[in-house]
Image 1: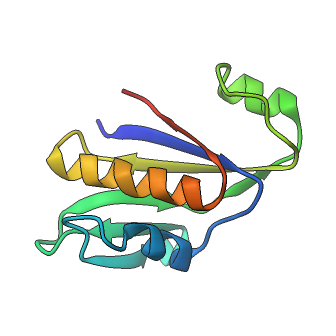
Image 2: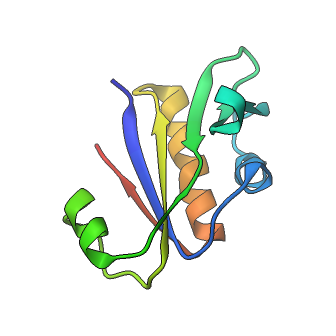
Image 3: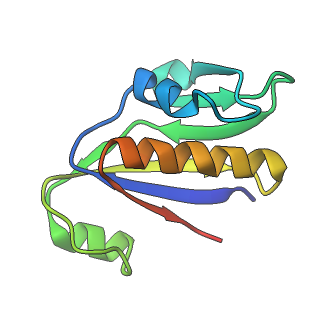
Length: 114
C-alpha cells in the first residue's frame, strides 16, 4: 500500500509545476503523464515510480474538506485538492520531498499519511 499524500492549495498545479518540484531531488530523473493526463509520475533513472500526482479537483465548501479530511487546517475557499502517492521505500522518501516542494511552491498545505 502506498503512502498517501494530500495537497490543499489555492491554485491548481500542472505537469510543469511537478517537474519543477522534482528538479534537484536526488533520484528524480524524469516526469511523465499517465492515464491520458489524469496523473503525473516522477520516475527514477531505473524507471521506479517515486511519486504519482493526480489532477487537482476544486472543492468549494469547507464541509466537503472536513468530511474528507477531518484534521485539515483552516483553508481559504475555493481549494484545490490533489491526491498523490509515494511508495513505502527509500524511493518514496524522494517522492515525499517532491510533494513537499510542490506544496511549498504553491503556498499550500501538504498532509502526508504515515
